[in-house]
Image (tube, rainbow, N blue to C red):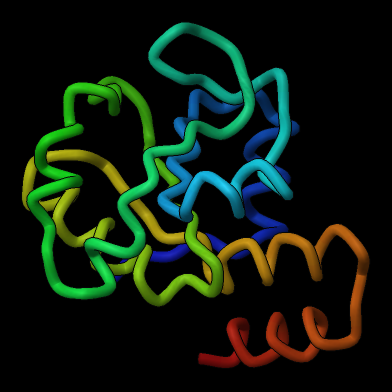
Length: 133
């Protein structure tokens, strides 16, 4: 499954690439922390990430909730799927790619993004592993 590292995502956001950040975590998690950026596209124009809370359903193997909300995800830009650690986001990415979207998973999910933003040792170690494999 294709992934994008947090540093790569940050660079693409800085470059103004047309991206749709799809955060599938529960709404309460999304409200606590989300990828912000006025240069991120959503269905209504520039905004930060967009929450489509289908994490619990996908985690249990039910993809119907995401399939039922595909009309909220634009097809004319790259989609970056975000969850807590990146594991469930891989399921969403796979479904989106099957449906014809150009989708990737954010490696490490919000945990990786937050670690990248803070410059944490944990992120630096994970980043090294991602680059090696």
